[in-house]
Length: 587
Image (cartoon, rainbow, N blue to C red; front, side, top):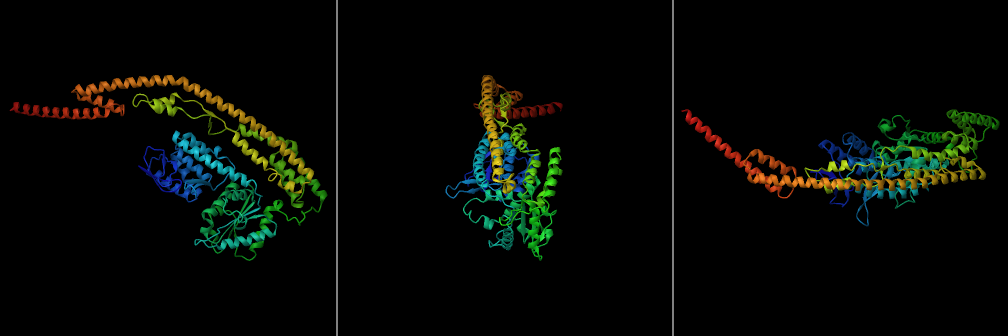
C-alpha cells in the first residue's frame, strides 16, 4: 500500500496500489494519485508535493520534470506540473470548511489550453479525468476573475521586490529601505509598485491579480535585501523568479539587485550576471535613480509639469526620421529602430518615431499594413499545430470494455483496441478569445506612448483602427465557434455511429466468450470430480484460475489442489513400498 500526501491539506493518504483516485479522510477532498514504480520515485514525488504545498513552486516543478523523464505516461504527474505552473494551492474556506483552489502565479494563457493539463486529460482514466475537469473548471473561474481585475490596473515603471516582515513577524529593515526607494522614485514621477502602499487599499482581497499586472507592466524590478535568506523567502523569490522568466521569454525588462550588510556573493545564483548595488554606500540612492531613469529612457513617466525634451535641431530630427522611414520601407527594421531610438533620445514626444517603432515591431510600413497584420495574426493562431488535441466527445471504449469483457476469454484491451476512433479536433476559440483580450488592451500597451503625445484627431484614428481590428477578429472568432461546433457535432455523430456499428460485434464476442467459459468451467469441474490424473487435474485447476471469480471456481480450485496432493501422497507411498519390495527380492 502506497502512502502519499494530500494535495490540498498535506495529510497522509492511504491508497491501495491499484487505485488512481481517492478521498482524503481529513479534508474530504477527492484527488488523483500517481502510479510510481519505485520507492525512489515515490520519495521524489512526495518531496515535490511538499514543496508545492509550501508555495515553492519552482523547486517542486524541477522535481516533477525529473519524474516525467521516467514516468512520462502518468496523468497525475502532468497534473502536478500544471498546478505548479499556475501556482495553485488549496486553502480552507471559512464558511464551508472545504478546500478551495487559489492561483499564486496568474497567467493570461487559458488553463484549458495548457499543454500539461491536456496531457493529464489524455493520459487519465475516466475516473481521473472527471476529477481534473471539475478542478480545472474551478481554477478557470478564478483565472477569469483575476483577468478582469488585472486588465483594469494602470501600468507601472518599477516594481520593488522585498521582504516585509522578519522571522518574528515584525516589520523588516528591508521594508523601511524599500519605503525610502519608493518615495525617491515617486518624487521623480516614476510610477512604482510598492506593496505596502500600493496594496494598502486592497485589504481583504486576493493580491495576486494586482501583483501579476504590476510584474507584467513594470520595465524594472528592484530586488533588495539585508540577508541572503530574505532573497530566498518564498514570496520574494516568487516575484523575482517570475520577472526573470518574463525576461527569458523576450520581455524588455531589467532586474536590479540591491543589498546591505551582507556579502554580495551570497546573492541568488540567478543574479550572478547582474550588477548589484550596495545600499550602504554613499550616493546609492542617486546612483539608483540615475540608473532607473537611464533604463526607462523614453518610457519614463514624465510629470505633467515637465515639458518633453525638445531637439536642439528640428531639421536634423526630420532628416533622421526620413532616413529611418527609408530603412523601414526597405525592410531593414533593425537599422530603422536604431534611428527612431536616436530621435526619441532628443525629442521624447516625436509621434513619427513612436509610430515608427510600432511599425518595426510588427514589420509593416504603414497603418494599413499594421491593421491587416493585427487581423491576420488570427489566421496564424488557427493554423498553429496543437501538440495535444482536444476531444469532441467522451471515450466510450473503456466503459464498454468494463461492461463486456470476460476475464481470461475476452480482454478489456481487445475491446478498447476494437473501438479506437479519432475523436480529436483542433480547438482554437480559447486562443482567439485571449488574443481579443490582448487587442482590447493595445491602446494602453502598444500605443501607450504614442497616444500620450498625440492630438485628439490622432487618438481617434488609432481608436477607430483598433475598433475595426477587434470587430474583424470577433467575426473570425464567431465563425470559428460555429465551425468548431459543427466539428464537434460531426465528430461526435460519426463516433456514435461507429460505436453502434461495433456494438453488435462486441456483444457477439462477449456471448461467445461466455459460452466458451461455461463449457470450460463444466469440463474442469467434471475433471476435478472424476479424474485421478495429476496432469488432468492440474490443467483443470489452471483453467478455473484463468477465468477468475466465476460460479464456484474458487471452491473447485481448492478441491482440485487437495485431490492432487492426495494422489501425490498415494503415489509417493506406492513408490516407496515398491522400492522396498524390490530390495527384499534382491536378497
